[in-house]
Amino acid sequence: MRKRTLSGMRPSGKLHLGHYLGALMNWRDLQEGNDCFYFVADWHALTTEYERTEVIGETIDDMVIDWMASGIDPNKSTIFIQSHVPEHAELHLLLSMITPLPWLERNPTYKEQLREQTSRDLHTYGFLGYPVLQAADILMYDASFVPVGIDQVPHLELTREIARRFNFLYREVFTIPEAYLTETPKIMGTDNRKMSKTYGNAILLSDTAEEVWTKVKPMVTDPARVRRADPGNPEICNVFSYHRIFSDPETIEKVNVGCRTAGIGCIECKRWMYDRMEKVLAPIRERRKEIVESGVSVRGLLGEGTRRAREVAVRKMNEVRDAVRI
Ligand code: SF4
Image 1 (cartoon, rainbow, N blue to C red):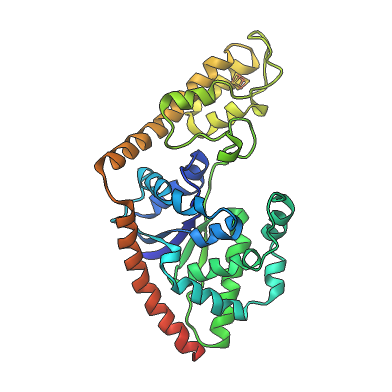
Image 2: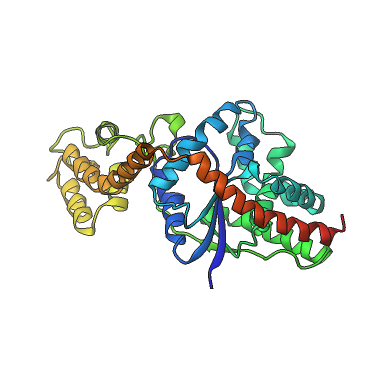
């Protein structure tokens, strides 16, 4: 039997390799044999971007083109925009009534973000409550499993607790979703910091082959390799961690030995890695080009998906209102 799953992504414009390895590869594979709902999480984006809302709307099309170029097929999956299904807001409100405040305040991501994001004020009601909105997104569709990385398990646990509480207070309305733990290779930016467009260290799925090489060539390596004849340590080199993701075992071993014995140079090593990485990026780039040139209306596809999502959401909200007797 096909199982239902749901996942969302904040609209942040053109996507990079981190998005592909961390989410889209799994989304694409899950489409086979499952009933997948993938949504543009524009209300979630508002929790942090409430002062520059223009970027949210502007970036949706680019993001969804990257989804499709990565293999997300709107004929297999339901793709939609969160804010176009207003039932999410109603369910969020009803769930917020039964969610004890300490459940939200103890959320480790909340505390961490408040500490780290010093450039904007996140002491808002919406930011504290975003896990409740997330619970509404998931529970609305009776998702039986949700793909998550290990660091997101506490969030899903909160959704499960909220669902159990609702089912206990009123009646069994919600499916309790299971975590589907996904192995996602961690990729750093070309400067060895977190990969982010803001840092200018991201390899975008829409970069040309030349642009990718321009970013790979100056990548920081083991600082001990000042000259070609200096042996290095691949374990501390970011290029080597890329090799681990993209290269075959023989190449990885050749780099491991060649680096330690100064048998290879860094540019040569980067070129091998780039060639392997291009085997992943080139087909995505090609599909992206085809999608753009086909003139397909991304908004039209999202509109169709939103219609399908709403059918499910409207039915679910009838059940919810009935259970709450409101
Ligand atoms: S040879 Fe490769 S792994 Fe070694 S330091 Fe240079 S780029 Fe890094």
